[in-house]
Length: 212
View 1 (cartoon, rainbow, N blue to C red):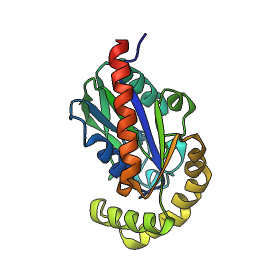
View 2 (view 1 turned 45 degrees about the vertical axis):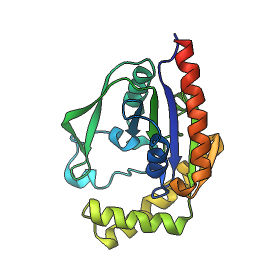
View 3 (view 1 turned 180 degrees about the vertical axis):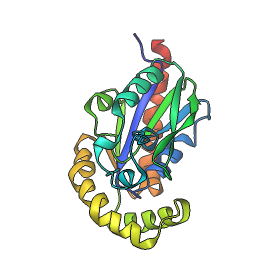
View 4 (view 1 turned 30 degrees about the vertical axis):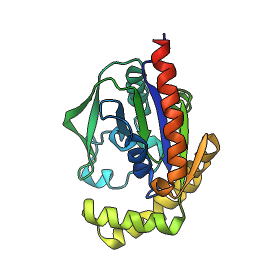
């Protein structure tokens, strides 16, 4: 069966600029052409645990991600089928009853710190990207995000960074750099890399349309 869509994986450490790269790539394509899938949407539902137990879960470890459901959804999108993506509530660490519908698109971008971790999903990708940004820049970005968007305190962000974020980055995230087809320094600000990616994606789209 010919693939309807092409799959692009974008990984990198927390605060590296993965979303900026994804948006920069998508800028030259119509909204109906590009679907952005965030790995964060596939965190496992923890409603079976108490609030205290949920707070101890290591969300930077691959075991916190529902790769089985993600794999199922990615396969459907590649074949041009519609899916219902979970909406994750970071305040309660549970999935909301509502879901987010994604129709068929020619370009699927999977973005997240562990986007290149799972071998089966990685093998479905047409392009694998790793965004490589200095540690000091990444931690500053994470502090700003967690305080402003997730109502976290400065001390809690720093404590989590040293307890789980940094060691998990070294153990699981950074090693996936070896799988990348392209390593992009400085995220979306690297206009040369983004332009090269757009050109490659356009070629893949043309080839995909010709094959269907």
